[in-house]
Picture 1 (cartoon, each protein chain N blue to C red):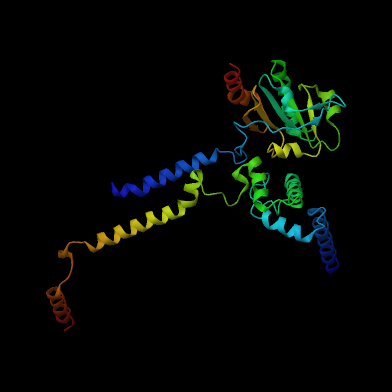
Picture 2: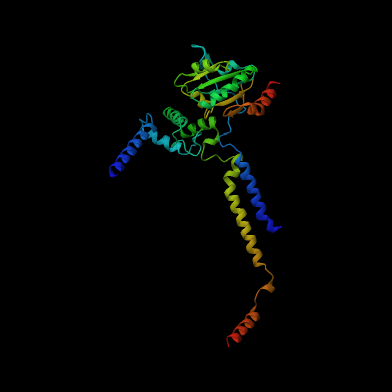
Length: 154
Length: 172
């Protein structure tokens, strides 16, 4: 039993090694690789849409990382790399889409909902405060109530 | 009136969610619609030594079908493309990432609906065209402007709904 567990652990380690080896071809320049991964974390993989370009193992993502590496080696800035990708795949590749007319609702939506909720809250509390005075207890009512209570406890 | 407000809000939400059910998240809007087709020069699969660039297809509208021999969906689409080609619509192929060099054998076996196939072995031209997977089909007009992109296989239903009306509109 225990030997089986060790065997499985060994297999798992081997698998991790294989994955790590495959995930980064010609990652010879650690500085460039760090820059790539930093940038790619904010880019969407167009095949596996809920993965970033940095973590996806889809073949197209690997190709795109290779493409970005090439661009970086050519001395392109991060902004130029992002422009290269959006030109081909649209704003869709950006996990932080730019602020422009089509994305106003996306960016301002949460604030809008906060304002709506806040207004609803203000209106509701105002209404409660504006309840007719007849519903409220004045000093005379309180005195009567206290008298009644005292009378009852006797 | 006031009591109905939450219910009305719930109904609006319901409509949004219902519509969302039928939207395909894979259908990424292509930034190329209305823009000139990206240029490339690639070897032609069918004619060793020859090259193809989109410039050569100018003069009438045409389709660029991105496919690969290793893609099973493309093989199903292949049968329908044969029908499309038979109607006289020029279909050009972009043989995408065919690392195992199987295109020629496959076309010989299944028939060749393409005017010709450009050989995009490393997939770089595919990246330039914003290809996310195969099959994908672009409609390019006589002036070399991309008018539509369809992701996924074409079948008769899609052809009649998306392609035919567009082709008729841009060719008239």
